[in-house]
Length: 219
Image (cartoon, rainbow, N blue to C red; front, side, top):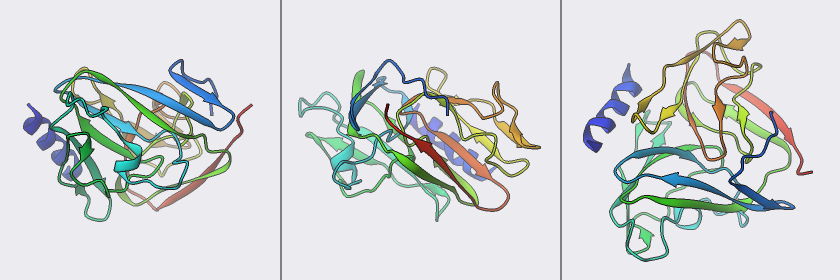
């Protein structure tokens, strides 16, 4: 099953609302976000918080269990923008990743193939002020950098005929593409599909590189 799905991902590579989600808890700028993992299913996730110490290695930011072995042999896949392909999987075993130095920044997407049903908790700081984003040419993953439920990336972001894909965890497939044209996305909202904290999307940029900012302050 995993092999078929991952081959499908490879084939794809070729071919501010401010309502805070119920599972986000924060005090001042420090908080945590819970996301659900399902056994033998791929979850397309992102880091919804900034690292408090600036360390974005997966050994510091993504911890699947407390060493109880329940998630041994779970896998993580990260998109390589330069190579335009998924990097080889890293494996969780004995309470750690076999490549703990892999870097995944706040706002980037990744897949986890979990070995057991569980809750993954991200801990970090809520970014505030002017928050920069960039969308390179080609295929890339991206996500909201702050833990709010919002339509993303916004109607002011996109080249005509750019595409974004969100992941259907239940169906284990990409949802139909949303297309940017004439200053809006053809999703339910002109600002793009709805992302919850910890969600990510896959962006197919067929035009020029894009750069934009968002402003956010914890009230």
